Length: 162
Image (cartoon, rainbow, N blue to C red):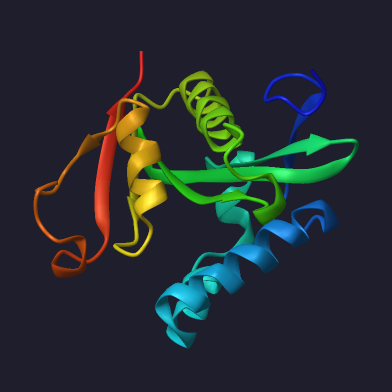
């Protein structure tokens, strides 16, 4: 069926400054500001563009349908054996289709192929769908899942890679 995750989609590695990444950067920035206020702009500019580039231990992947980005995500080097997932995004018109799960699996494969043995990430306390995504995909919460997320701050997760 056209548009189903994995069918009719292309996975492409790009740089953060590639025009194809613009919708990811723009929409993710807008979402962060809507959920966390203007100070969230700092998160989107905190890391240099090379953080998401392969020669520096990172990668940015986009899922394209008919050449248009519908989802994406990145990882950067956290330490010699750990990749840190960042910039997970699904275009607002394409949510609830399993695309984030596909991006996460592609990032895990790429990280394992690059020699990483662990994935670390944090998500914000006002992103319950992200929290659910990571728990549903075998990530271990490094916080008390019974606590109110707003009392914790960033919610850390990890997953060991094969």
